[in-house]
Image 1 (cartoon, rainbow, N blue to C red):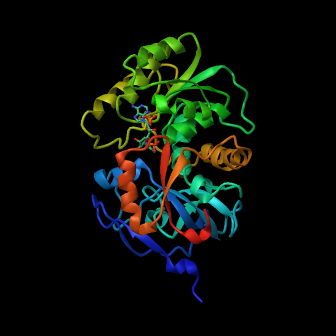
Image 2: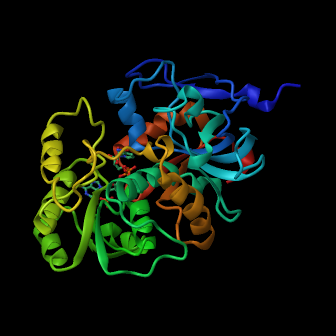
Image 3: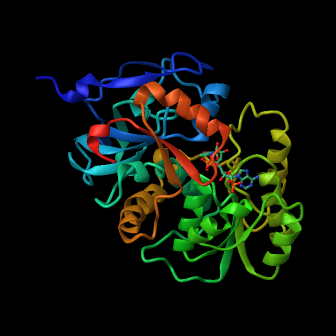
Length: 371
Ligand SMILES: NC(=O)c1ccc[n+]([C@@H]2O[C@H](COP(=O)([O-])OP(=O)(O)OC[C@H]3O[C@@H](n4cnc5c(N)ncnc54)[C@H](OP(=O)(O)O)[C@@H]3O)[C@@H](O)[C@H]2O)c1
């Protein structure tokens, strides 16, 4: 009898710039590579990068393609060298389909394939629908804080505060929420920006101080607050609306120069006006963070999964499972759960594009697997 995995269904994007999915038979997921894990998908989460990919086709992929970065579900198959997972494990995984492995690795299907290095077990008490908010944000924040800024790695229990401060611009976004928690667990004090209504939320995520990014005086206020502190650097978790410039100005003012990891994406074929931002961020290089490679300012979320570096192991393998079990890493922002499965994904992308505030749009894919 054929494995149920053979009856995969997927939401296909048929061509570049298409803004609709065609649901049909999915790729064969029955032969994971040595280091891959096949997951029966219970929930997927929606990120800005998905609707941006449909609008800008910012990476070369073979069409038809399956997009989607965040999946939560149950392991059904493991590659021959996988040691940390077995069938039946409840997991979350960062799906790399845009840069690695092709359509098999997109999240928007009933069965997806992830690399073991970007997969973590979900404690029994955490529903799939909550755990699924984390994967892409986790890899992104990891790349920004630990690959580019080269901060100390997070620990469980959290490293006691050293008094060093990290500015996380956009503390109520998905990426900022995880970045705040990671920086806090690494012993840094987090200062962040968010709308007034999300100041309590940002503090719950680890910030010691929150500034309103809409305040016209926010940059001078932050400079004044950070002046004389052990300022360790800034991470722009927004990528537009002046956020990269603001971070660059603050870093330049306080440190005399340095790298500002930015979410600015895509780094090539940039939308109008963005080149200048990149130029200015690059211009503040040369100070305390000197020595990074040529294009250090743009965060590449996929790096922890594709580069052979220590970061994926240290964060995804050693930190995340223990931190989830102990509550050091919370599954935030809260999901806004939609139903309708693969057929309704395009509506979910449209909802995310309209904007969220300390929320993650999540789609139920297989209701039979529980919340
Ligand atoms: N380069 C990469 O590898 C990579 C990877 C993942 C994401 N990204 C990019 O990173 C950005 C964030 O993604 P996400 O999923 O975290 O976004 P998100 O959760 O959808 O972002 C929404 C949040 O952004 C906040 N926000 C909006 N404008 C802001 C500003 N000017 N300053 C501070 N906060 C602001 C809002 O705060 P309030 O509600 O408090 O107003 C809201 O909570 C997106 O541009 C995304 O495309 C890049």
